[in-house]
Structure formats: structure tokens, C-alpha cells
Length: 64
Image (cartoon, rainbow, N blue to C red; front, top):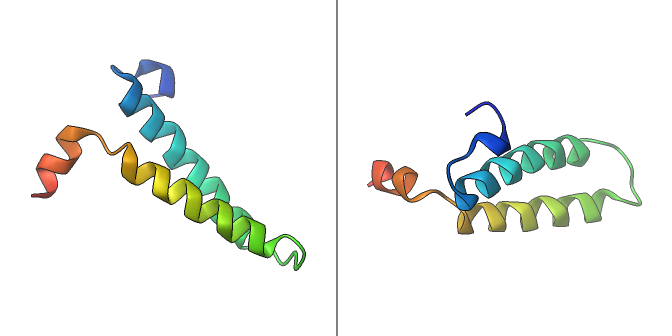
């Protein structure tokens, strides 16, 4: 899947978008901005939680 619009269903599309957002949040967490560090870590945690809710079913079956 090259981009989010190629996803066959909404859950797979959402998972792809959130995965990209998590990567960006990781970069933000690496900054040395003392005022925003807590917010960046909170954002990363929220995105990670959303990713858990959007894991495609076929991905879950492969893990078992």
C-alpha cells in the first residue's frame, strides 16, 4: 500500500495514517524543548493507544 488512500477499508487506512503520525511523534519526543516535552510524550502515548484500536484483523491473526 503506497498511501493511505489505497487502503481497502477505513480501519487499514486509519492504521496507516496513525503509524505515520506515531513516527512523527517519536521525532518530536527527541527534541529538547523543555516546555513541550511532556505534551509530545502524551501525544505519542495517545497515538500509540489509537494504533492498538485500529490494528487490521489480518495483522492480529498473523501474530497468533
